[in-house]
Length: 305
Image (cartoon, rainbow, N blue to C red):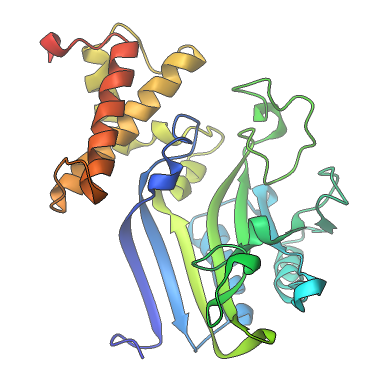
């Protein structure tokens, strides 16, 4: 039992060191603020999914025509069925807004076509502390997730790189057209010596990035680093550098890395972490060193600070 009860909502500081090499594109950060709601053996899919749709469409005012969702395909060899309940629930919610939402299976149905809901395998739509089902130890809980994506528009799909010109367009592509804005994890299985069995009290774990939710409410600009939170930092860096944000791709990537790493370092230090060569201190030191390195690449001179 949790001391606060079976239903909890929170907002927490989050740091993901594993995302450090991803920083530099239009959406990845190591530090972010995570919004969450949790059910510990209380409500489940039939309550959570409609609540999330209401939150996105009615509370945030997002146009449902730009929303896409992914669900777990299932794995017959593990005895885990396709999560049709989640997919069909999203589909009914779209219908309530007058939008047809066909369901497709990726990669069998590769093209976007008219689909709004996609099935993916455990590499994309499964969560446990250990990762995919094969990596889970005996006794470990896990379950399928259903992720929420915002479509910035097909014309933005190749806006940063030509890498994706030959790729099939789909919601889990990294071209920049789609941005994941939230994820419902449904913890309903436990791995046993006999295989996967249903948990007696399934749980809900929703996580939504505040910064990502913020950028999609602004409309059609897919750059997370243009939110107000980064504005003064950007102006300060530009003051000591000959380059401007939004110029060429290489420069913009460097500025994004500086922005993210400085912010992350400040919050880590605020929580008592100091630079060192071990554990959290090593991560902080790496952030600072990378910020300095990319600062030098864009012409920031230490004597000017």
